[in-house]
Image (cartoon, rainbow, N blue to C red; front, side, top):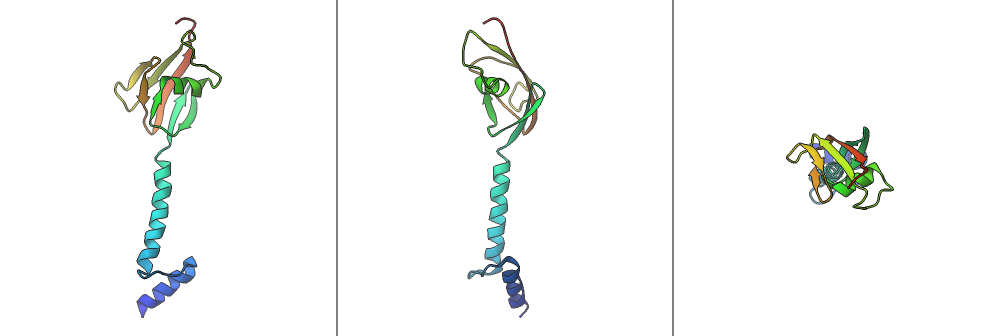
Length: 121
C-alpha cells in the first residue's frame, strides 16, 4: 500500500509512467542524466593566457594551439616564433617554456601561460 502511494506520487511529480522496475527505473534515469551533465563539465579546463582566463576542452595543449589562443591571427610561420612560458602545469616539469612541436598537460584550473611574439628565430 505504501509502495503504491509512493509510486503514484512519483508518477505525478515527474509526469512519467513507471516501467516494470518502478521507482528504480525513474531514479536510474535521473541519475544517468546527472552523470551525463557532470561528464561534460569534466572536459573543461580553465587556463590563463596573458592574464586572461580561457576555457579549453582538451587537457593537453600544443605550442601552436596556445599561440592561436593568445593571437588568433597568428600563422604557423617558423620565421615568426613565439615565446611561451608556463607554470602550474599537470605535466612535468610543472613550469618552463615551450617551443614549436612541444605540448603541455594542464590542470583543471589556473595553469598559467605567457605567450609573446619574438623578433628572432
